[in-house]
Figure 1 (tube, helix red, strand yellow):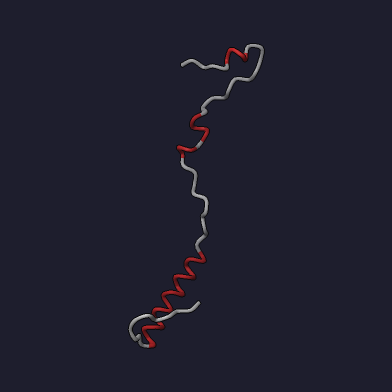
Figure 2 (cartoon, rainbow, N blue to C red):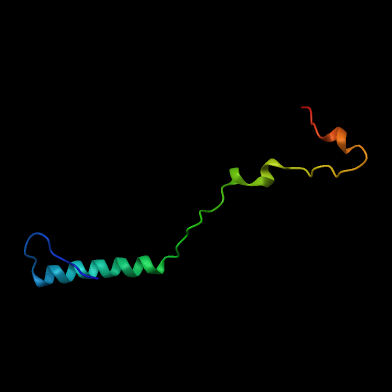
Length: 69
């Protein structure tokens, strides 16, 4: 990693303080677990929609293909 001063003339103490902050942030970021997958929301849970089991196919299953409300 290279740090370049673009403007100004920092003193060695200011540069050391800035470097300490950058290193501390890098260590903290590497310790946190990366969560690429967001936790599932209750609205996207399929069990919320299908609260009861679907009927099993049987002799009269053709009549259950349409569920009137």
